[in-house]
Image (cartoon, rainbow, N blue to C red; front, side, top):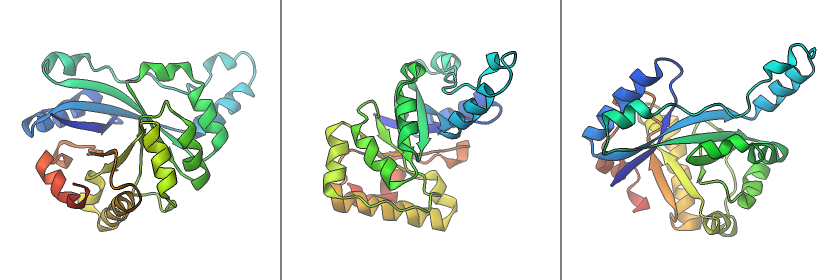
Length: 220
């Protein structure tokens, strides 16, 4: 069974866009999808600003962990397909990693991924067993240093390394960044615990499973 565990939550027309992506994905043979809600650590700064306001306004505190996408319609329309809610947390500060982990609302989500922005944040995530997926954004210019030891630490806590493909289809620079990262995973970790997802914002970004395999042939 083929999975696509990264369909970003649309900014508008959520159900309509998701319906189109899932419809195309099902035709290609996918039988499981995860809708990803992205959260940046800047929410903690926003929350602090709210708390500094008058008490009369403090009841409208910024939400740290938003509610997941309602997947009931998709589950009804596609009863043989599995649907999950995933949250992706973008972090550069170790303190914010701890703050995110302490949020009880994380339990609402089926999958938890972290997207580190710094080397220190990457290292700190080796002690976060609640993390299912280590996310990578090819637009991030910071290239991290991976060692066999670091890679093994993630594997031991059952973390999966994500590679996406949709951003690299239309942009040569992003495609190069993705290939470089995949080579790193191959060199230091023998491509253990690798998952490839679409990160598709629109239906035409979806590719069939076997086409995806051809994008990263050396991972096999």
